[in-house]
Length: 259
Image (cartoon, rainbow, N blue to C red; front, side, top):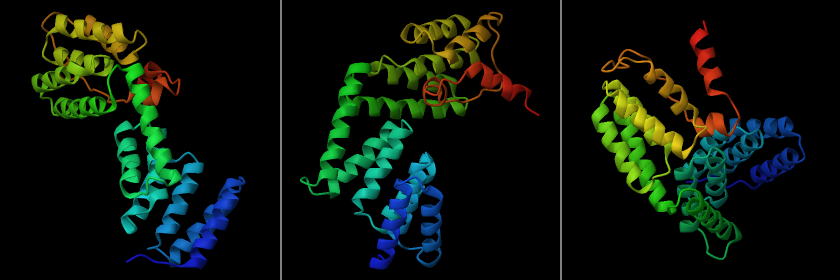
């Protein structure tokens, strides 16, 4: 059952109009007050999601949009805006999933459905241009990468290497896979293989800092010695450092000396 309340919907609309004019705090306060009396209103949760989106808080926006679609699964605008928030986070898999949901449940003639389709087509063209593979292949490779990374976190080094190799069969332009393979080889004491993997990552992207830093560490190891006992820090380099122009080395140094 969903709550239908025209007064609530009108109030959310007025609050979002304030948000669009830059009066974000005022609009947020109105919708937050509504939530106290209408916790099961999909419109209220949607409104809060839009507020978070305006504030650049993508994770919080996604949580609100998901709450709205949990209450009302056919809420096109919530699915669409969830896709936009995931796109802002560079989460390609969930972006595609959200926009495909819009296409699945919406009227093909609806403008928001057409817009969702256009976004997917644009992503497809971009993927072919930058990675040389189609979107479905990329998502398949990403799934394999995530599985291999899970093995790596469990210190299943050989299994992780096999997984990263499987990821690279079709998605060859993926320095992250080569970089992680290098770490796995280093954990096994296979210095030459580790350095070769880092070099492959840097052939694809000479500025890929994780491979640059980790290669320097492994280069200093004696042959046969492993990284065992060294603490590994997991980062999403392109999302959190490259695009935001943050320095990975500085971040790791600050983390090392932090109290």
